[in-house]
Image (cartoon, rainbow, N blue to C red):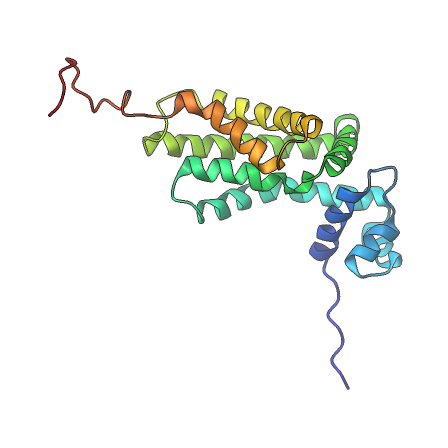
Length: 210
């Protein structure tokens, strides 16, 4: 007898649901769409998650715990804390790589803002993102990539620039979203970066160093 096929895990189904959500807004998405993406039958989704709302809540609940994992993985790719930060935000934009998928994401955000259960999860996700962003900024200060600054405030501004940049890209549609985000984040971080001028390496009396 051939071995029994491995059952599709909840994690695989939730990942498939997230992919389907990029193509369909909350009003259009059906369990059949997700089932087709996951390679299961709709009855499997009903058995495990009950309703479409239950499935969407399960998808949303993965976000807060995944934030520290994403930051840890990014740290393993880059030596520079600032490089890690910029590339991480750019990579995390892949869920909205087209204006259409971004529009769908905004439609789901309406649920996040108006439904108390979804809002609780989204708030936890944003708080985790802000905390992890601040940690990287603190590391950048310690590594002398950034000048000493209010990293909590800068982390908040980075989140705001990220959201606004995504909306502007969807309107202007110039280049890729990742490149657009890199440009805007670098513009925000530029004045905070250490340079030869502010590093203290120059002669404080203004004499030229031979």
